[in-house]
Length: 101
Picture 1 (cartoon, rainbow, N blue to C red):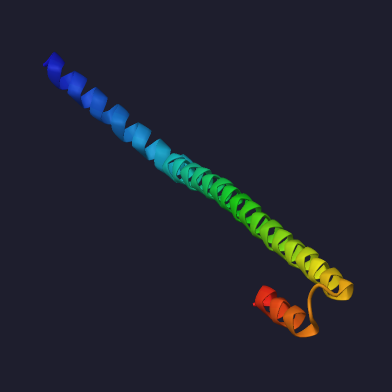
Picture 2 (tube, rainbow, N blue to C red):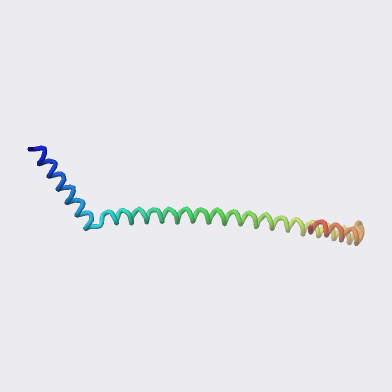
């Protein structure tokens, strides 16, 4: 008989706690907390991805800029050689086209 009473008491306590949880919305609050946590994690990951993409684009811009600087420098060298009479106008034009393409 004591076993029955314990089972009945536990069952009543469980039912009471479940009813209280439903009324107070504990399950919904836990779900909302999990959702907010996941959203915060997504936002952090998105921020990291954006930073990496920004760094990558900056690196490519620097590479392109350095290449154009090299081409300009080479064009100036060719121009000085042409003005000095070492290169003919045709040779200068040909080298310039090769450099730009």
